Image (cartoon, rainbow, N blue to C red):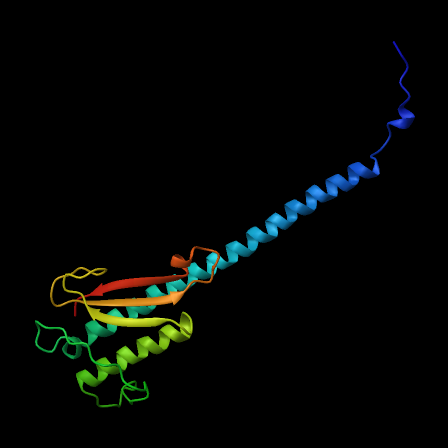
Amino acid sequence: MPKINFRHAIGFTLIEVLISMVILSLGLLGLAALQGISLKNNQDAFLFSQANALAYQMSDRIKANKRGWNPSGTTVSIPAPAASCATGCNSAAASCTTTQMAAFDYCYLKQQATAVLSPDATAVITTSVGTAPCIGSAPSLCITMTWSRTNQQLSASMNTTNFQLEVTP
């Protein structure tokens, strides 16, 4: 059996160390990119849950003020949102009509959507008698909120998202 000289086979060469460092750095760069994408998607999920909370809060306001949104009991009327949410309807001592309170609530929804979701967010309440996306029977309202996604790496058609909730006053 031939004798092997182990003196030349001890340790790693500089090339092997450099190659392993390149592989390790590429793996760490991939993990950093994955972390960034995960944070953006987490922010999108957070905004979706905030839109959900705002829509259900507005749903509760509509149901608490049925006369302001459904004065006749058969036809839903959507008040124009107040020009300013500082109408005085937000305190217990204020004496507002049901229509004024509905306008205040609508203004408050629009104000909260831009404050919580994004500055370009929109919140719209429409009647949804047999029309998409909210298909319901009369009297029914559809709360729709639209905002820009945080993760802009998606296709152009997916850069905005929306949330719809159908409410019967």
